[in-house]
Image 1: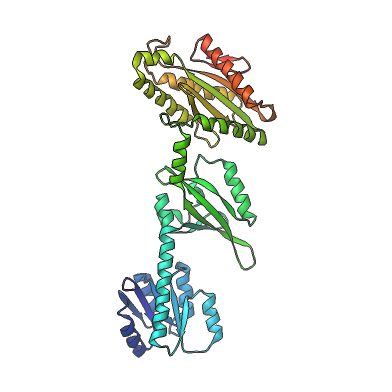
Image 2: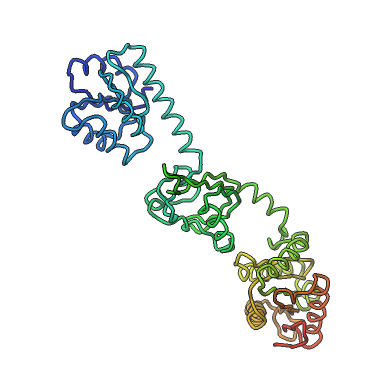
Length: 412
């Protein structure tokens, strides 16, 4: 207990002396105030851990004092002392969220019991504050409260978070539709549970499992939301290690097979465009033979970096599906946009100027087979892969460093 400080408010000097003598062995520091105004000033000046106050004090009565303090601190333990059997005052005290009360005259045992209860409350709140990732917002998503655990995981200070919109955590890798569905759920009064990738202050990302619950007022209107989160970043990293290619860090063939159909289903559900790119590094065997496999690995990593940087939207995926073969899945780009996207990748890889003496371009290049369709016009996975493979080898046979569209149109 001697780690904590106490603000004691009492206008009877003799009582102050007796109670202070009794409690000083338990507290690091005891601050004394003889009236409500002095107590409020000392509260703001010293920021005590516990407040012990008589309900009847001059200048600013105990209930008014507590009301003022609760505006800035909802959780500090507040103990009220009263010599009166005024049930209305006790009910009012409960309404303004006092922690407990003591009737005068009280015994030493009773006082110590109440003080220990307040200490337990502090330790419980400290445990929550330091370990529970929890934040409150108003109905517009403006942050009103955060625990220290939120500060620790996000890298933002409390001052930077409180008063800011919860979208400060929004990751560019999460689909807008997910956020819309989330807000639709909680604004209708329902609880939402799911996993989100959040953005830190330093622009890195972390994963949380979140339960968001509406908070209701006495008329059952929503007055805000509470989000309780669990840090699942380590689990996600472990999952990523199982689904990523170890050399290029792109998604591996296993995830390609499962994501392909999901992307088709998503495009059909929202009646939007589905794009598939099949990519292959030109003359890669001769590149390995000429420059060695270590240089070949570095070349693969350089190509993968461009593919990864080009697929930053929520529904974009880049894969290494084997050797020098790569694939990309996109949602929402029409044929012209998909062709521009493909050529930008092709040009970016050529712009790396990775020397390749066996290539007619003298630098490492890539060929691409492109498929694009919308909604119910999207064919099945086997047909898409087969046609894209034909388009890819059309690029290879004509000149390499080329994009060929499934329907036969070529673009260099």
